[in-house]
Length: 451
Image (cartoon, rainbow, N blue to C red; front, top):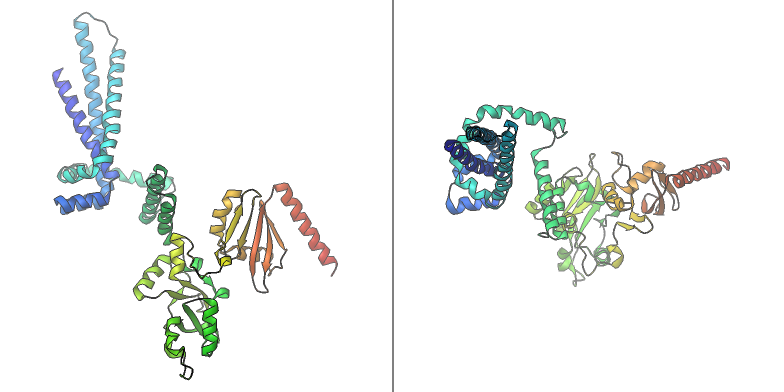
């Protein structure tokens, strides 16, 4: 009887230690562990564990399960022994009662010693536990090698769950976003801080094309323009860096820095030649990721790049500020006109409608329109709301033309001869949408009949 109690106590304490290591290896802070190693040494012993923490956690999990089985057996065996002793003393107890008592005690011990306490220890001292036990962790990892062969089951379940194609990078990003969301709920992070973290994480998945100023909105001048024109242009536009082209925007000669004109101002008779003072333009493909471009801009110490399509034509322009705004939000200076600070998308929840610029991306539009129950269809044929309208209508629309779709009606508010500028979208009920579509069709037939 005493031996059973000793075995149960030893297994319980050992199981608590192993369970704590199991949870610690599954969720530890690299930074805290690195600080411990820098302070107390042991980096060489810890590195292999950190680099393959999932495998080491699996080994600890197997030993933890073994300890739980031994503990249950020891407690139940002790309960049966107690039953025999009670019978010898003339007391009556049914075997089922003995097993019930043993099972109940085992359940309480396992929940307490193998779940609740280990999770708490791992949360508050997991890194210290790992740092203090590298030898034991590696030893267990070695003796549990045969059981780790069953790891293929994890891959099979991963495929069944539809996560077979999730990369380690995507998984790490999801974890970071989850941690940020949890910290925001607990009050550790402010909402704007969480949004910045989300923007930084998602920056690598955004392309230059999604963030650039389109070609139709580029402000620049020709290489042959004189000093007076260039000076007036800079004063009106307010830009410190301006692209200069030869003939059209497909032939960019370089980038003019406004400060390079200072030596020509105030000297009326000084000969002016634009080409020698131009800076070399940086050209990037529209498929380049925003994160890669940010690194390249920093390395080259430039703030602007010309975006090219697959045929080598200029499709847009992107600046360091454009990328920064993806992280911190819109940046305005004291010289920017007030109307330029209007958002691309303005949602009115009360009327279940929204005004938006045609240049707004489908992704951004859907994120904003979710509040009023509208979702624009996505396609590889277009990236922006304006592109969606053109794809639906098949021509450059006039102001007042509408597009009726699943749950909404979109109206063109402003349009030019070559592009759409401003749109209004309203949520409608299915019946109202059908009536709208019928009216549009009738109007279309009427126009055709009048030709």
